[in-house]
Amino acid sequence: MNQEKIGKFISEKRKDKKLTQSELAEKLGVTDKSISNWENGRNMPDLSLFKPICEILDISINDLLSGKEVPKNEYQERLEENIISTINYSNKKVIEKNNIIGIILILFGLLISVTALTIFKSESSWGSIYSIFGGIISLIGVGRFTKKFKVTKRIFLDIIYFILFISILFIIDYISVINIKQAPRFAIYKISSLNSIYYDTPFYDVVRCNVGRENEYYKVIKNQNYDKENINEYCK
Image (cartoon, rainbow, N blue to C red):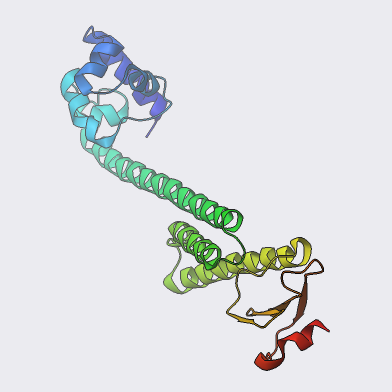
């Protein structure tokens, strides 16, 4: 399907009908710019407009897709070629639309996660909930790109992406604990004592010592079974 050739043919037949771009646009319910883009070969009319265009310009769909008036002796051959071209063009448009939606979902998911980590305080569980929710949204977007693979490979790629996404969130959280001295967002348990708070995360634990005092500090320790009755011991 040659876009430039089809565009020139539309322009030629429009002029034969003594129609301006504006007049043709008005009849089709599109903008002047759309007509200009078609005639310059920048893009193609929507499939739903093929029949109205042909009726207005007094040509067949076969002529339109061929970019010329097709002789009778070539009609059947060109028709078969144009059917295949139309199917390929339609599939290409579906893929392009699918990719755009996928990119939007990925970016939207990332935006939700980043926003959650910056807006909600580290002590709030909403930060971790929304950041993981953002990961799920972005995973749906990635799924738009991986669905062309076989089911097994698709599931594998989606799982790998989600694991990487969650891993990055945990790394960011760990860096925040170390450098910004804040409570971990992804704590599974939080146990408090008089002067200390113990945060149990899946990969490491954090002890917040001297809570409310001037010399308050955070101490990262290996993931272990905490002693609920002697949390203060970890601050020594």
